[in-house]
Amino acid sequence: MKKINTATLTILLLFTACKSSYKYPKFDFNNGPNPCINAFKDKVFFSILRECYKSTDAMKEIYKKDVGNPYDGIYSGKLFDRIDSIGKNFAKKIPPPSLCECKPGQNYFMAQALHFYRSKELDSIAKVELERFGMYECK
Image (cartoon, rainbow, N blue to C red; front, side, top):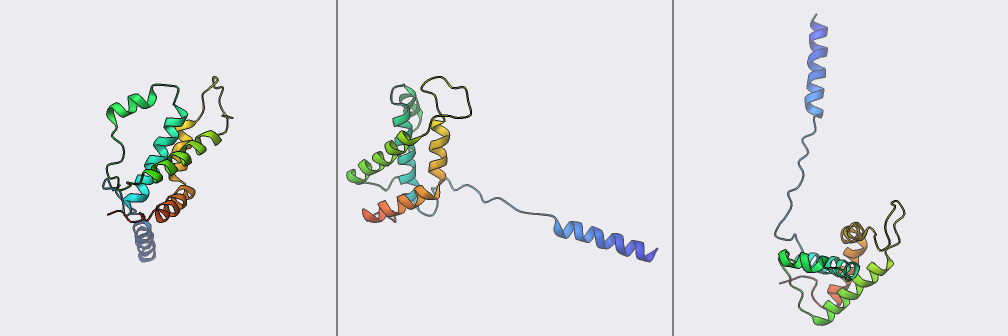
């Protein structure tokens, strides 16, 4: 009987010790450790959307409510032009949809823009371009 109690106690201890208590990091509404990177990526994201939806009223409707990045330390007109060209070039490279029966002109624009936003590639591009313009760390 003592062996059964010991085994039961051991198993219970193992289950409680192995219980995962992982807590997800909370989202930082203040724009993270480097707001310049986020501002750059936000501008690229909106540039992609403007290019993809340029023949519609979609962006006009978005801008009625959305004011863009809450912290924007980017102030170079030349960098704005560079960001626009990155977004437009990406939008032009979006391949035709392959998994849906889409109507002409339809695509996964928003999903592709979000995937690019989250990519390490855009992180690297942002870092290089911001350093090139002397704005890697926003003030």
